[in-house]
Amino acid sequence: MEKNLFNDRIPYYSELCRKNCEINPDLYSKYDVKRGLRDINGKGVLAGLTKIAEVKSYTIDDGDMIPCEGKLYYRGINIEDIVKGFINDNRFGFEEVTYLLLFGELPTKQELKEFNDDLVFYRDLPTSFTRDIIMRAPSRNIMNSLARSVLTLYTYDDTADSTDIEIVTRQSLQMIARFPRLAVYSYQALTHYFEEQSLFIHAPNPELSTAENILYMLRPDHTFTELEAQVLDIALVVHADHGGGNNSSFTTRVVTSSGTDTYSTIASALGSLKGPRHGGANIKAAEMFEDLMENVSDWNSDEEISDYLNNILDKKAFDNSGLIYGMGHAVYSISDPRAKIFKGYVEKLASEKGMEKEFELYTRVERLAPEIINAKRKTYKAISANIDFYSGFVYKMLGLPKELYTPIFAISRVSGWCAHRIEELVSNGKIIRPAYKNVIKHSEYTELKDRG
Image 1 (spheres, rainbow, N blue to C red):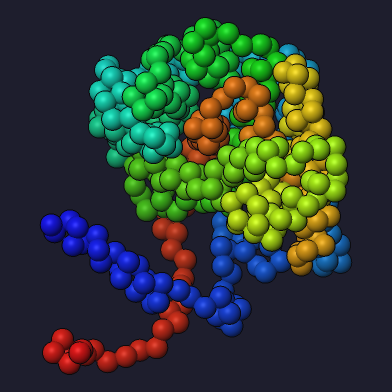
Image 2: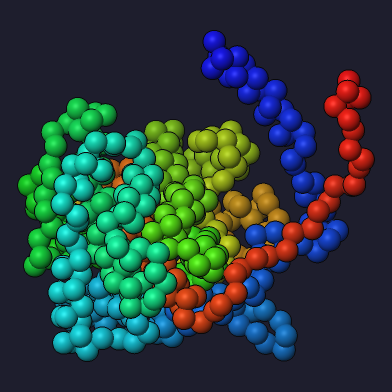
């Protein structure tokens, strides 16, 4: 009775929220507020300093911002050179990139071997953790399951609240090493308990890389091709960090600055990454293409594809959001370096999987979408494909379930989160506390008996 009565009042409460909580967007201009810490032209408001990663999308010439091909640097090293380096050596790169992000320099051959051994050592979960935590309370969303697992791991750590750098470093290595296992096991629990599928729980193979182990643990027969593992490894490399200004890394730094523990910090970052405007965007891009494939009969017709894309912008197609997912970026304009790196390997994988037609459709949309967006909407910078445009397609070709798209992003980005947490602890002593301006007029308190 009480529950139903409460539920009946939710619409009323919701209307009060809509009426009294909305901020007039014109006020942001009036008070020169940088909503989202962004200027109106998209340039980021300087909110912190970092050595970890740098995103470059323009050059300055006589005070003017000149758009350039996008660049991403990890600890000052161009990500394109990093990828080229480990590909030329015919090895996997995610572990090397993780070392670089955490410790600020490239490892020697011996240091990389020892670091890989450390990650293998830290992959182990507490006794019965898989059964008692992951299996007994499965979640329909793996990101929530990951966050719960991270928070629960706090109880297994006798020094969980310490912010001593040695302890935080150990905690960081454990997080990075355990995330693939936590994500894959959470997915297996989901499919078993909610979809009544067979349950496969494979321990990671100590001889395999992070990318290889994701495929090894996920697939019932353990098998994968060399190209599959290589493309997934590159996906992990290019997602590992994106500077301190991305939403989840900024969340990491804000929460860290309060002095809280590593587990609470990483759980907060997971909550941020889960959002469709951040880590969930690759799912939206993949679903948009599925809808396009169903509604466009001729994939070689620029006219038909353009009509569909125009319908998206007019909120008449797909999810009626008016957004062409995977196109445009808050920082990049001419190009997203991650998408450029990825695209060549996407084409190779499409050839291996016999999905050349789908790849051609993606490239056609990549060509047409910027023209259509620029013709219909006023934009302050060029539009190009971002990493989410191709990553969902890659995961589809790898046979990865959609439920794991964003968790795989987390498996990669936890390296960057841990690096930002360590940098924040080492470098700063102040809590991050931005200012907000109140825009409501002051009023007198009214006695309850006089409120009508």
